[in-house]
Each structure stands twice: as C-alpha cells, then as structure tokens.
Length: 323
Image 1 (tube, rainbow, N blue to C red):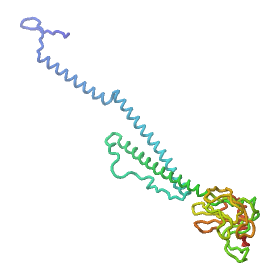
Image 2 (image 1 turned 90 degrees about the vertical axis):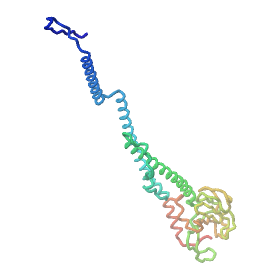
Image 3 (image 1 turned 135 degrees about the vertical axis):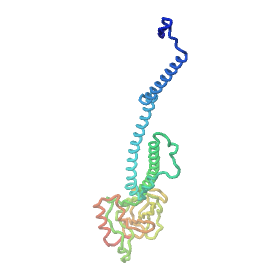
Image 4 (image 1 turned 90 degrees about the horizontal axis):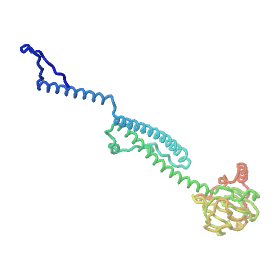
C-alpha cells in the first residue's frame, strides 16, 4: 500500500493530504510499462544472441552429427575409390593383358555426368556444397563400379574360354615315354622307306610295340576313326576346336568311335602297322586351320625340359621315316 503524503497549508495553518491527479498517475504508469517492455526486449535480444534454447542446442547437435557423418562418408568413399583404382589397375595391366583384351581407357572409367543439373534439388541449404560434392563422388563411384563389374564379367568369360583353349590344345605326347622304343623320325624332309626319295614328312613317328596305348593329346571330338584315308591305315582324327586337329595313324585298333567326346589323356587306340607302314609305330600329325604344323612345339604338357631337349635332338635328324 502506497504511503499517504501531506503538505502544510499556510492559510489554514494545518496539514492537508496531497491528492495525485489521475493524468499524472496514468503518465507514470505508461512510462513504467514502456520502460519494462524496452528492458524486456533488450533482455530477450541479448539472451537470443548468447543463450541457446534447448531446441537450438538440439538442432546444433544434430547439425554437428550430420557434418560428422558426411566426413565419415567421404573417408569411406576415399577408401572405396582407392580399392577400386587398385582393381582397375590390375584389370588393365594383368587380367586384360593375360587374356589379350584391350584395356579400358581412364576416360571411360572416370567419366562424369553431363547434361542437366542432377543436383538442383540439393541447392539452397546451409550445407548444399558439402551435400552436392558428396553426391557427385558417390554417383561417379557407382558408375566406376558398374564399368569394372562389366569388365570382370568379360574377363570371366575370357578365362573360361582360355581354360577351354588350354585344355583343347594338343599338348601331350600321344605315346608314353615308358612305352616308347624310340622317336624314329620327326617333321621335315626325310627319306621315304619305300622309294628312298627325300620328301616332306608331315608328322612325327614314335616306334613302339604293337598294342601300345595311344592317348588323346587334348580335349575334343573324334572326327574320324576309320581306314578310308590313303596311306594312314586305321587312323583317328580329333577335332579340338579353335582350329586344331590331331591325327593318329597306322593303328592296330580303336578304343573310340566317331563323334565321341574325349579328354586329354584318354585312351583312344593302340599302336599298329596298318596302311603304308614299314614297322609298328604311331604317325602323329597336328593341323592348325587346315595346315600341318610341327608337333614338336606341343609337348609342354607331358615332358620335362630334359626329355623335350632329347626329343628335339632326335626329331631334327634327317633320317628315314617309317611311312
């Protein structure tokens, strides 16, 4: 309750109560309210600048966490880019070289995205630059992964074909060294056993007792197993695919039939002396794309270096052939 104030009235020689006018009271009240409002505004302004609300603190933590997650994402992308670069390097310089495939140019591996702005919807935010750059890197990384995946699919197909090719090439000696009497004659000009005239001998002659096993030198399909070719007697021809054919002549009997599939090392027949032959032996030829080639170059699958050198020495002698 406000204090009552008095003043001394000289005329009446007494104290009188001071009466406050309503206008004055309203004036003071208005000034008080304005001052209070002003100071309240100043306080709120200062508090908003220097004092965080719980909601602001939560939003700030969320923003910091988002920035941290983007930094971690970028580090993961850096690691993924390094791993992918290593795979791409091995792909170009090892796998594709081995399988004789053209390397993939860097322009194709690392190409970006042209045309319209793919990231327009990400513009206008506080961290738009960070978000857009991360999305660009991620999109390019995904594209590189697709390119590399397709390349490895191609390499897998080439590897499968290479495996089939290596299995198909006639790469072993058709008569085992344990059963071999000697290598009688090689590829080249040789003396004919019947006419004594030098002529081209298109294969290799392996002398062995009658009935000695003869083996397929590579995977393939039996193209012929008959005696309907002049001079060869009973003989077998195997189509290995990829342009390769092997021929086994002067056989005693067959162990396969026409159109039968065989694997390298399968028993296909037995040494004999049928046809134009002077003694029991196997006459062996290899064709590539229809042309006869020297079988000496195809024994890497069954002979040691010492055995091959010895075979090469005997094959180079210009002696008399057995057919």
